View: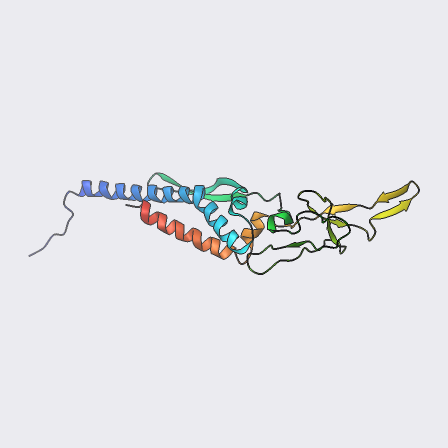
Length: 205
């Protein structure tokens, strides 16, 4: 006696399997779009502010959007791959990191410009780019910190006394550099992977 093993209603079953594959592909596509549109920005904002002493809104403000860098096609559905961009051509000034004092004290009172770039630890002196003391130019209202480029503030020349050059101090910190930091980047990757996994569970039937 022979027992035949076959699929009943084969054509309908095959059509159902194709539909399942298409539904799966749609779920993957939806997940990739969700993570690119919202997930990466949220993850970067959360992880950067765990390490750096900066506001979440400052991180979000540097979000430039996403663009497709490749794709695969499954069951006729295009599943895109994305890169998410954050603005990199503007660094934060020390004023973003609880710099004190915010304005130059009146009179000739000595002061030290201090800041707190990281979430942990206390405030420390703002480093000088030139080796000369950091100072604030304005006595009234918030002021950026400055460096002298020469030892003396004034020099006497043929046309009388002139002020020596100064330059504003930047932190050289921008959101992309913060995300790439070794204390931030692994956590960003891990959280994005979790979001993709959770999205697939939610979007795939």
